[in-house]
Every structure is written in C-alpha cells, then in structure tokens.
Amino acid sequence: MDRTAGIIVIGNEILSGKVVDTNSPFLARELRGLGVTLLRILTIPDDVETIAAAVREFHTSFDVVFTSGGVGPTHDDVTMEGVARGLGRRVVRHPAIEGRLREYLKDKVNAARLKMAEVPEGSELIVDARLGFPTVQCENVYILPGIPEILEQKFAALRERFAAAPYFLRVVYTRESEGTIAEHLHATLAAFPELLLGSYPKMADPEYAVKLTLESKDRDYVERALGHLLSLLPEGAVVRTE
Image (cartoon, rainbow, N blue to C red; front, top):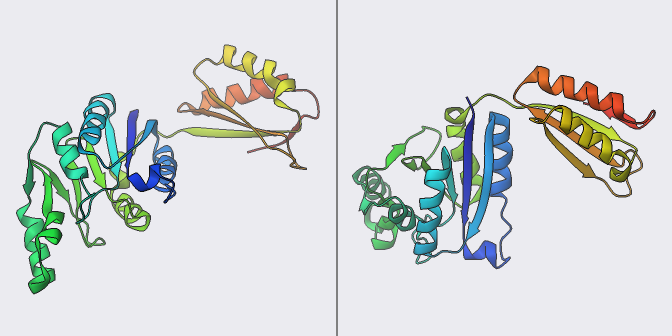
C-alpha cells in the first residue's frame, strides 16, 4: 500500500528566520522510513485564512496531513481555528481536554489556558500514556505542536499507524563528476523509468565526488537498476556501494 503525505509548517517565526524549522526534516525522514511518500512541505504564517486554504488543499490532495505549530494559549496560536475553517467545521471546547486542564491547573486555570482545549468539531483525541497531552486528529489532518521535542514525542507515539510498503535504497559513491556520469544516469532511467534516482555532488571531499541514490518499493527492481548503472559507469569510478 502506498500512502502520500503533506506537511504544513505554521509560524511567523519560521518565515522571519527567528527560528529554524527542524520539524519538517524530522517528519520527512520518519515518513520515508515508514514508506510514506511525502509530496509537499509548505511554510505559512500564523493567519487563519491562510491556514484554512492550505488545509483545504492538502486535505483533498494527500492521504495524510501534518500541521506543525500554532497550538498554544497565546494570540498567535490560531492553527485550530484555521484547520477547523479549512475542513468546514466549528471550533469547540473539548470536554475531556477541558476537564484535564481544570484538574491539573486547579485555581490557576484561566481563559488563555482553556484555549488549549479548543479543537475542530468532531476531532478525535489520540491518547498515549507516555504523553501528557493528547494529539488532535480531524479527518486526515494530524495537528502537532511546534516545539520540536514535543512534536517528536507525539509522532513516535503515532508512527506505526502510518506504516506503508517500505522503500528499498541502494547508494553508490563515485569519484567521477556529474558531467561525466550524467549520460549513464539518463540511460539507467530510460531502462528503469520507475526508479527514484538521486545525484548529490560533494565539494572538496577526498573520498568521493557524487553520491547516487536508487530507490524503489520493489527490491528486485532497484537491485536490477543498480546492476545496470554499475555496468555503465567507467572503470574505477565507484568508490563503494551501500
């Protein structure tokens, strides 16, 4: 089974360069390892209409959607409202989250903190004993926090539900430049058009000049493509394979 995904990164701080986004690279690596095909990463500001438009598009374009950021008690935490609007739903206060907040905060509870209980109407709460706060899912949209440590914990608790057919990867390190081997890459793709072939030059590295990656969800296909490519490369060009 193949599954597609999209990631929406939300935050003025990312767009202004005040904070470096590490959440989307983390999710990209995790999803690839699970066999999920990530097709798009979009970074947008803390604006309800912009979030709504992105969610509306991603919701119908991909099997699963992740949002990162904008889920907190402050004025710029508008992701819940944006997701709700994008899915044509109201924002409601979830009684289970509200009850937990009141129990934990007691006399320190206030309107700002109770904002943490607001979710798109009809959302599912994904509860894990390892986490202090549930993950909110609405249809195929998983709403994750922007704090990397918490996002990573939440995804670890969710990851197995996204597992798909895995990708099989082979790697070739070559001493030759891209200009030298380009014709062999084209020939390999002509022979194996479904192959995912990547070429990544490395500057001033004494070991190799280009790293090549060959990927497919068919193990035999990628092995045959590897053999074909190796047969085309000049003698002595390959440093090693993985």
